[in-house]
Image (cartoon, rainbow, N blue to C red; front, side, top):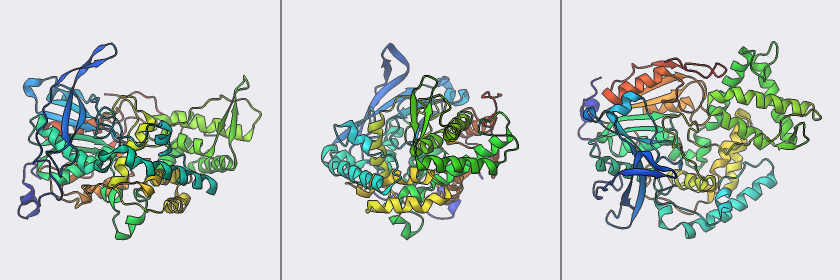
Length: 534
């Protein structure tokens, strides 16, 4: 396929249908006054600027908000192609600090990150002055009916106060408005078309942009793909009443990733959770037994000094889910599993205590080596508000909070523990106090000026299942899927697949697509040494 062919010719149709809803064309182009970013110890090695954009694109000349940006200038400015914008996911993760992409890309492009509207150093939205209220918006998933009733009451109390405290910005947090902001930033740097790398939730930002502004797409990489219909409304009319966290099926991807870890564990003698003659099936039984034991009551880890740490069912599930985001963590997950297993079998045996319990799962890649990671500390409590401010305005959800628990229990047999951890994440949406009338819910098949490149992990993505990358590649107007035989969440430019990085380099620089049905291998397995041959 000739990459420069027009969208109209590619479809045999006339002019592309203009986007529905407000556009960014009538808003003033932001002025970016770049200056060296300042850290605690002086200037940093990237530049910073602030952009002013409309609060509402229905009133482009009205109130404005600020966006915080940072840029790594192209290292070969004489041969510069343009700018690559990035988003690390979340929604709500800090994206201002630009990542380091491959040298061939960094030479030809400025790399710009930005904190999306309502988050971090951009004009932030807050539900409360009390950090405990923000923390309540990400409840630990309940196990008992009493836990569920408490979570529903506490979350409802916070969401009821949120609209009064947050102000008008809360009603303009949908991804569509972030995409309109992104289009203004594209215009501000002087690019005619957008170059973009988005991971996880950042893929939805790319999907929305590609359908609002299809002729402004040059090169858009979507890594760890959210299925846009499932995220917003569902594929079928009846799915509008399902929690979005049930529709997107992240729990199924997590279960697939666990299967991969246990299969690899059985094949590698150095795996601490393994045993002589172990098979994937026998390790599944061992894991299921441990999960059932912890579900009945906490397991106590006791160190030789007598200090203890209580591992609850939620602790174990969240630790597993967080670790599955990065397959390199399998080498740490399996000793942790074995430690808890031995403590459950032999309570009097001393074991290391104070095992860290991770934060609740996000839709963003947490690996600091990832190309699209913000590489900045995130205030966890505020993140919970930002996450829900976007997700709940983007998506249709049941307004009965008890329905969230019913769907969690419906999903549990397919992915024990993971289903509850994921599905209950949407509990705040059942009582979220505002909507965004400018959100985007399709169509998703507008043909873009150039094809979009999707990357999906076939062996288990615990947040964005591979099946969603396949579905989205068929749904978008012009797209190509690059498959990777690895587990984990996201793989672009994180050092796990030279094959992937090479294809992304060629696509961003020269718009060269991988052939259809291309499958890349990972450079190492989860129990191989963490070195990558280049």
